[in-house]
Image (cartoon, rainbow, N blue to C red; front, side, top):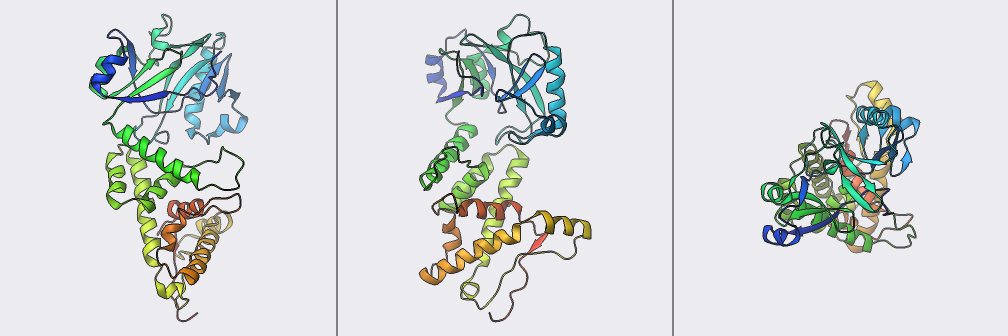
Length: 341
């Protein structure tokens, strides 16, 4: 049996000419849609990466991947509908949190199932293909010419995603993967190879190590407005922190303290002070910046922290990323630049 607890797409990139060579003219496929393929249903249960959802996930939704409780409820209903079916049926779950490129909507489609080692798309199954939650199959070549994105069955049974070389998906996937590889090369004394590198951290790495135009290229190619807003916020906050740290600050003549704005209502202020450690994160990052500046006199040291070695004990990329993701001028301020140290 193929390893399929986390159903993954094997991706290859090609031109229209190359696609015609790879795929028979009568091959069927589906328009590719980004989303989570780690969900499945079997014998009345909803599974995530092969395990049953726990009670918290059933009542509040899942965290990794991020799926809202309403979508979990829909999957539960679907599992009950198929509870007499012995097959493990895989689902494609999409929402505004699920992808970089695709912009919603909240959507659950039956993707297919394994017949021994062969993956059968739901659109190929005579009983399933008439349902509304099945993505209808068309000629793969027609889909590729229209959308540049298509899912077809591979020779080894696994689905294959074929993506046009000039698609935004290809560009962003490639540049993020290269960033992740460079980040992995910075890891030292970490035995666990499953160290998680988030999309936000990959974007921050690109932001700090590449030229401005490359960053803007990523933002212009994003079609998910919510994702674009989040990356834009990281960019703006990163440049804000980077430019506000002057030699006067690093020499100790001025001070910068990250505080909570006093005009927040008391309930929110209390919640932030109890639950959020952003000021602590800022103090930790700023202490490293100042100490390194004293020995190097390098004003770019904040920017270079993103490219620091990552160990079990220290991960400056994660700390700087947290600052850039969480900082909100409506909630936080860097206080006043106060007198002499």
